[in-house]
Image 1 (cartoon, rainbow, N blue to C red):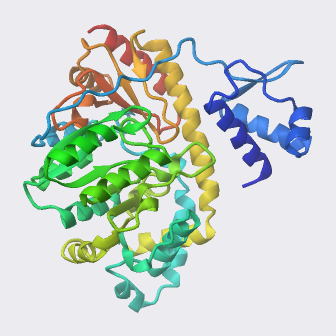
Image 2 (tube, rainbow, N blue to C red):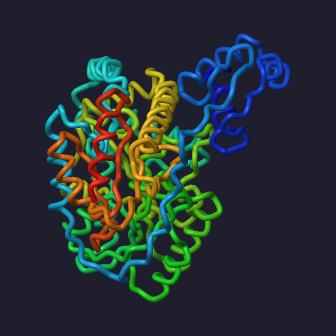
Length: 469
């Protein structure tokens, strides 16, 4: 990372943390140069970058100021109430309706689960694929089929190590995206009819997997900023025969909530006390806005109870469908389950990502992606503040590409979904994120696509539709 980018990220973090408030003057070029020991040109480059990201504005003959917030602040949603203790899951039809609404390329994709392909280095990945295949011996195609491409595994293990989590390579299995990793992890520790603790609201794909595997959900409420309610989880673990937990400890989908390090330690202590494995869905780990990468719960795991699942689909190559699982003490059964199902992800896709991680500038790409998403989040929140009703509440996650909106109780998000679809707008209604069909007055919107006039018009249309309730 160049020095001006590091300095820009330091200032951005001060703005996000509220140390530099909206309307406040940031350090002058001369002051910043002296205080941080950098050249004036470096400060100018950093401030130009922060302007592009919409975080500061220049005022003639006055200096640079933190950008004023939109005309009104959208407060965070209320804490979700505790749900019924156990529930059968049946959300697939709703989820398929949302996925179907995205088939038309002319649809505004606020309901999408993926960022725009425009944000990814697809041309560079294609060159990496060609290069990787040219250097691949015929025997290599079969040799690493189960565990995955050896070069890719080395690169993933290296990234774990650099984050302070040395990982035995035999613990790692390459999968067809995070969904296969999560499926394998769950199947390795449960049987049909078992109870699984999940978040509320939860990512609808996790509910679909529970539905398919005939597992029952124990919903644990999630605070929209600080994450899962550990007191409720502790009570549920003490009273119910829960066989597994499935949580996102960082940038939870759909809320964007993140546990802090102390809460992650407490979460691990809970599952360790009750000997219940945790399937940690960490698909959004690389999409944090701050300069410090978050620690997963896996970092505190000293007994192999955490099945850590990751993917390149959300941060590098959505169509390549390459993920992984670090299975801890469950690595062997996970590997055997994989042999009985898909055997191996695409060998060319693995080779492409392995080469890109080594030579393509992955961390530079991630910085650019995070900056783009942070800008797009601000643009969506600004639009919501202009067009949505005064009672609207919204999350303000420190990463990812989803916002969760809570409207007055009179708003029916399922009906809103149908009305918006007729107007060429896809949204994700709240009930698809709950085993008990809760959150009917809530909506998840994606800011993962570059903002344009169609995005702005779609937010205005949604506001008009919401006003009719």
